[in-house]
Image (cartoon, rainbow, N blue to C red):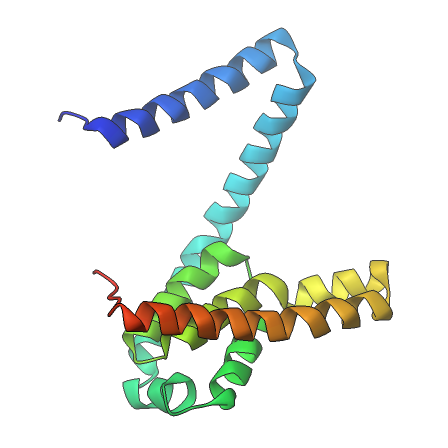
Length: 174
């Protein structure tokens, strides 16, 4: 198997990272050790979380009907689609790397592109655990202002991106 240009660059980056972390542990470089520990911790969290999340996403893909997604998230949903997107995004666990498969599933089932963008934005900004953590440390005023500014910006930017991509007949490839 021969590697092509981009694949070769990706392999070189991964190997360079691995060499850097190994040399950091041998040479006792604190920054490299911290990077290595953070990488290992994040990798272990993902390994624990991803299988369960992908099972749930597969069940969503099988059990939820195309018509249901179209009715609540589709082009005829109006502002209700964004509210459903905010509710679903707020309950998404695991961060953005789990919201993208859900977004793809929503899009394949007939969700409007701008609502899918809004869902991804809400999953990054309005997650309930993150908001509760922020509320306890930053206070209710900060949290209210952040959500009050973020939510309209997510909706407006997702509408603009959706219209631009729909104008150019954007298609998601399998």
